[in-house]
Length: 301
Figure: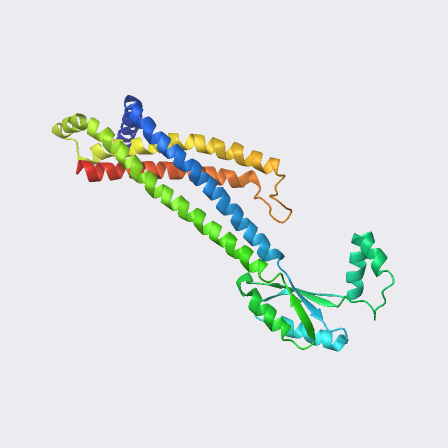
């Protein structure tokens, strides 16, 4: 009961202190708000880039073209050899007959239908294929080369060059976003610490009185730490509102896709609410850390 009373008193004092030193508090809140807005953008971008990368990895397929003179036994032998490879998803190796491929192409376009309707099985340039998905896209080039070396495979295509560049670009963007978030958190903590340092300096007489009446170091520190927590919570309100409204509007405007069907955005719910919880927690933690650092380093209590 006593601990609860002390807690409520310290919380009340820290809230009063925020409004008593409003100009300095506003500087801290503004600093936290601006930082968390940038953090929110970075987190949203990083998570969506991660989603794009996952979709790329799921959709990338190696297409292995089979020699026209390969019979059924040879085709079966090729499938067995493909399934023996390490980086191949066993459930996602599928054979596509050239007749099926021709029919699908003719159904999708009248131009193809007019051109291909007179092709016979012997005259068609279309080949039987195996479509293969890999477990690790980073090793797709090596896997494609091994499939190419299988006897009976005439050629292999998987968008070589472009796939590696796309995955590499997404990975770089993700790392940059993470670096920005970490850097902003560190910078913000130091800025808050310096702002609270000024607040503490302006209240040094109050602290001296607290010392004279026998207040312990802990009793002096706790109100400032609570004050930082409260400033962090206030500073996270605007970023949370902008994150919810902004991302929902963005998703609605682009109908869940960016530039093409290929690049899909993460659905707003429950994703943005997790991001908002992260922003709130981050704001409070950074505010508390900034206050604790200022009290510890500059007051030397």
